[in-house]
Image (cartoon, rainbow, N blue to C red; front, side, top):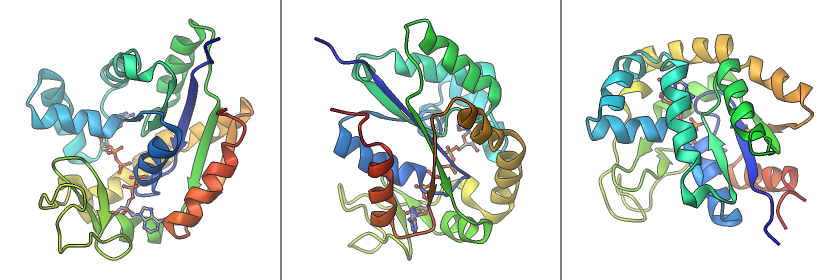
Length: 222
Ligand code: ADP
Ligand code: ADP
């Protein structure tokens, strides 16, 4: 018997810990971490037509248009490694994206199983984002104070020198938070109405958030 694929959506403002937790969940649950931001950055780095289209929006901290974003993520979800489902991080970010995702899943008799909203105050968000550092090789996320690498500014996994994302500068972060409030926050009510929403206090140490998250997902995976 094949088991039904499981889809978990991680919601929350930029910097709320979605990527950090998705990485841990990927290991624990064996489901792929599908991050729209990572897909865009991969395309940007490789100068693909998609990356070039997305660049100006990302530089400003605006959302990339829905049609481009939806096509990119649905294409990713159709790949063989997503046959058992996926952990979605950073997508959907608008009601139109959520509806397109629901429609694509419904076509296969599937649906989102859980949407987890990480609640973190704005002041903490800014501190987290400005201290965020990324590995250019494997995409691992660190924080200069809250989650530093073992070796000064080098990735624990592969030793590559960490970098700061261009859009993690304070001016862009302010716009990203505004965009979040206007376009993405309404998704909390969208998923609440579908009775799949779980809210988690994300303003705690990484391990405590993981524990709450695993509890919220209990029963989803055999
Ligand atoms: P964060 O980790 O801070 O939440 P992401 O890495 O998810 O940020 O996204 C970085 C940028 O990529 C966004 O500011 C936006 O320009 C673009 N992006 C990512 N996901 C989406 C999406 N679902 N819809 C539109 N744009 C997106
Ligand atoms: P998102 O994917 O939601 O944008 P990230 O997972 O990239 O968020 O986290 C943003 C920054 O905050 C990163 O530098 C990360 O190391 C750090 N961080 C993540 N979770 C926590 C936490 N629970 N406590 C303190 N810092 C955290």
